[in-house]
Each structure stands twice: as structure tokens, then as C-alpha cells.
Length: 408
Ligand SMILES: Cc1cc2nc3c(=O)[nH]c(=O)nc-3n(C[C@H](O)[C@H](O)[C@H](O)COP(=O)(O)O)c2cc1C
Image (cartoon, rainbow, N blue to C red; front, side, top):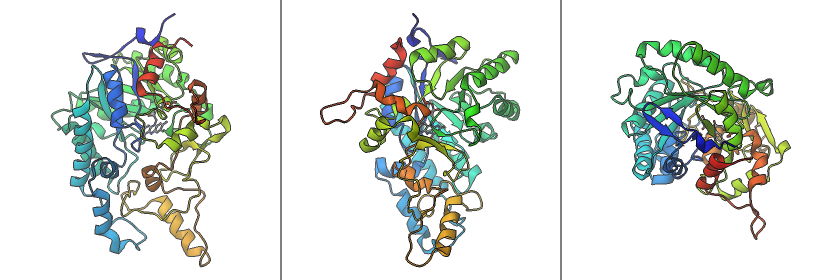
């Protein structure tokens, strides 16, 4: 019987173990997790989600505090277009995160950064360009771009000296999105180095609609993407993601023509994960019916999470002056608007609770949005219960090797 370790993925001249640990923001796929994947010969991701806030937590910088101080006298204003990010601060935070990670990296694998383009950061174009170019400058091995894929990403990096050397990949949920990206980036004479095909069972935000995500099947989408790539005689490794829970399931995709798999949920509960211990235990305990898909994210994309996530219907005053990662170019965020509307129509003294949106920045920053993959309820099947009755957190290495060598 074959095991996943019998295969490898080739990207450019380099070979890796066929496992990519997907980006998990905010600071869930930590540098510690990503460098373990690289040490073991695979690819790990850090995430640039809320990079200024993460830099404050990890390195003691004061980006968020400084931003709040700068704009606190305007915080009564409904429209938040005034609360612009300082591009130098974004560049500095990104470079700090990337360079500190790359200093620690060892082994034959690589560390990539996941860059969600739906983080509009009050100025989508300039901030995205700064994020992309700063990550390249600080020496990241590769970038995966997705979650609101921006068709001009290649253009934004095209002048950078590392544009043709770093591994640049995209995350899509349909062959249509891949075709659009390839058409748009044709003039740069550079193909993506990999394509992650993310299906409807993934964690985080989904590239499907709330009312029909369950009608899609990862294998069918992967087959379409591979057929298109072969028909066009392109050489782009395809990496399926979403609900791949074992090495044997990964092999089924490799037999279809995929080069590796991207996985995340099984790593949410490892020692190196950024989730607090209490949240990890909630992930272990989850039952199938506790895993829901809703539209409370102000991004407008459906998101999968645990039903008992503290962010749901929480009483949270928006903090766009400090964070504001989801403000659009006009300075609006649907949670901010819903909150202010509710506050103005609420009888005096009553608590404001918003049911249909959440303050995603504040709650992701504080690990109160327990986003997770569909098969989170299976984590307990592979876990050990320890003396105090809680589940033992495995290491990244243990889960990684379970994928590579698993026979069930
Ligand atoms: C907790 C969690 C957070 C995630 N955050 C992100 C993210 O910030 N950006 C992104 O592109 N994908 C994100 N994802 C999706 C993963 O990178 C990955 O593609 C997917 O979850 C793989 O499926 P699996 O979780 O079933 O293994 C997240 C997934 C999880 C479980």
C-alpha cells in the first residue's frame, strides 16, 4: 500500500513533501508551525492577516495603539475613511513578521505567506501592494494569494526584483477564477507556481454562496482544473484543499493528477497553533451539528465556525480606529454600520447586540471567532484524553507525519 510519503511535489527546481499547511489567520498558523512544516520538508504558511496587530502581540510594537491615538478624536464619526493605515507601518509589520520567521527557518522545505486580498484595509490597492512587496523584500519563500483574489496582484509585484524568483500561487474555488487570473496576468509572462483549489469543506471564508456551498464537490472542481491545465499544456501544480483528513485521502487526489494537498483543520489544535488552549479544547469537543456556515463576516463571504464562537451576537463596540482591516475604500464596514444603526434605534440603557454581523477584526484578534473546517468534529477521533479529562495537543510534527505515513 502506498503512503503519501511515496510522493513529492516539484515546484521549479525544488522538491517538497506533498503537504502544504494552509494559512490560518489571525496568527493561528504561527511562524512556529510554519517552520516545523519546512523542517519536515513540506511547506508551511504564516498569515499576514492583521499584521500590525500581530506584530504588537508578538514583538511588542505599538502600531495599533499609535493608530488609535492618532484617530481617537474622530471616533464619533460614522464614516471611517479618515482612519487610514500608515503604509510604512504595514511594511514594517510585514517585514518584521517575515524576517523573524525566516531567521528561524531550517530544513529542506519552505515558508510561504498567505495574503487574503479581502482585507481591504481602508485602501485596497496601495495596502495590498505594500503587503505583497514587503513580504518579498523580507525574504519570504512564496506567497499564496486568495480569499477575494485580486486579479492585479502580479502587476503590483512585477517591478520587484524577486517577482520571478519567489513562488507565487493563487487560491481558487473554480476553474473560472483560474481562467480569469491567467488571462489578466498573461502580459507578465509568468504563470502562478501553484494553484490551490479550495473546496466547500474548508475552514475560514468560503468561495461559495451560503445557499449552495453544499452542492459543490472538491473532487469535481479539481478534475475540471486539471483538465483545463492539461488542455492548455500548462505546467502548474494543482493543490486541492478542504476536508482532506488523512494521507490516504490525499493520495486519492494525487492519483487524479494533483501534486500535493493543502490542509489546515488538523493543525488548529497542535501545540504550535496560535489558538489559546481553551479554544483548542472546544475544537476537540465539537460535534458535527456544532459546525456551521454563516454570513456574519463583514467581508460578505460565508464563513465556517463553531456554533459556540464567542463572536456570535456579541456586544462589541467597533474599533475601526485601532484595527479597521475590513474597511472598504470608502471607509465603511457592514458591522460598524449595523452597530451604529442599532445603537441609535435602541432604547436608552439597553445593550446593543448584532445578530447578523460580527466585529471580525476585534474577534479574530482576540481568538473569539472559532473558524474551522467541516471535519473539525473528527479531531477527537485521533486525539488522546489526558488525566485532567482534556484532550492532549499533538505537535505539528506528529500530525504532519500522520498524513505522510498514515495507512487508514
Ligand atoms: C482556523 C482556520 C483559519 C483559516 N484561515 C485562512 C486564512 O486566513 N486565509 C486563507 O486563505 N485560508 C484560510 N483557511 C483555509 C485553509 O488555509 C485551508 O485551505 C483549508 O482549511 C483546508 O481544509 P481543511 O481545513 O479541511 O484541511 C483557514 C482554515 C482554518 C481551519
